[in-house]
Length: 365
Image: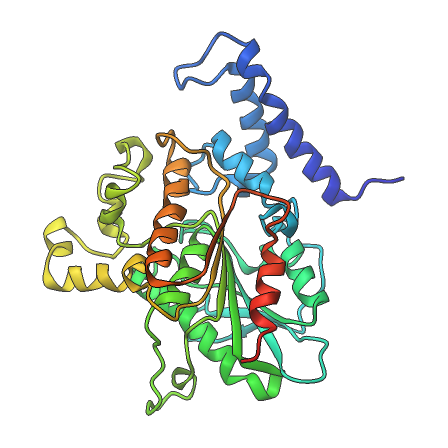
């Protein structure tokens, strides 16, 4: 039997990353980074073949990033969503590159459901640290296929990056995308009362923000899109962050090492501010509150399903810090306190994110 290009790519990455694990015990000559030379060579090789695995776009592939990237190709039952980096496989969208806002990256793809009546909608939001990524990554995903096979409509969205907008505005790009999709409900056969989000990394944190933040709808506004609800009825979060109030991270995951940051002011520039004093001002504190999903979690919020790929323990790298299990644990604590259903999965076979979404969305709107 001939292997498909997708399977060959998966096998190549597996060879480059997972096969390196036994070497940690066999090779006793660590490099300055603490990684055996053979593993470093395999990681460099994997980065050349799979540059999209470099989640933080720093030009170096860590083992954590590589394994997280590999996990994304195992399909929804493994708890990863199987985002396809090639973007070349999978069902073609019914509608492509539809503008939902004024910026060039305010674009989405839409897959119409094969359903007689209005269908639930799943909105896929890509990751990439708000500096990279693209909606095409979802096209060949197991998550997309499973939703379409179940008769759900799907959309995949792009949004502005940090060079063009601060995080507080980027989040509103995704909110507007959800509102735009709801505004198309009669035309596109969508049940606007049953809309879910599914995201990875930055897309996961965005999905959590949409699921928890107070509704941004302006019922009396001039823009018909903004009259629609921005809220989600369920969310699947892959390798999520707990909050985009970044100073709050230190309280549960610890401070980053300086070498993990893209410059000494990255945490301030995340909000397009110029100093810590500006961030600490009343305006800055209001922005931090607005971006704080932990603060927004409250009774009646959407159920969430969190997939964890990283190990426990002290953060060892930027990627580990960004996606540490303590992010999921903080969300779980806040959800439990508010009575919001929250599931944390570490790839358990009996915890299927696709099944979770179907159960949530097949309830009456």
